[in-house]
Amino acid sequence: MTTPVVAKLEFSYRDSDFRVYSANTGFGLPTHSHLVDHVTFCLAGSCRVTVGGKTFVLTDDSRPVVLPANIPHEIEALEDGTVFINILPS
Image (tube, rainbow, N blue to C red; front, side, top):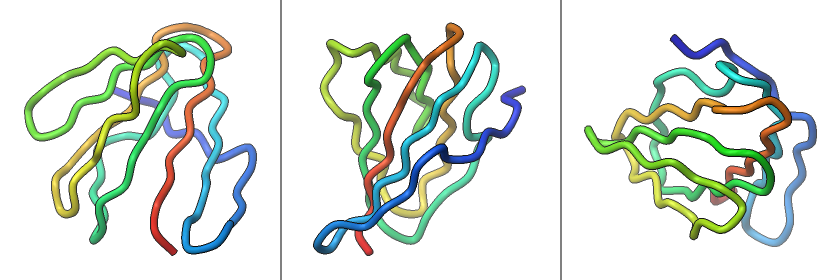
């Protein structure tokens, strides 16, 4: 089970909200959903993203993953010092 973490930095730019997370192994965002599509990507370390029954491992070399509206998803850090960003429409 993923232990919840709060964003280290949150800001809005143009029509998007950016949420930057720093998480150690086992921490992240437990299963939840949103009313809007958004994307997530990893800047450092690695994280497991589960969405719509599919699981992806993201690293700093990975492309962003789209998290569709109303589909439960979860993001969990796989190593200490993982940094990931979620970008949502404002």
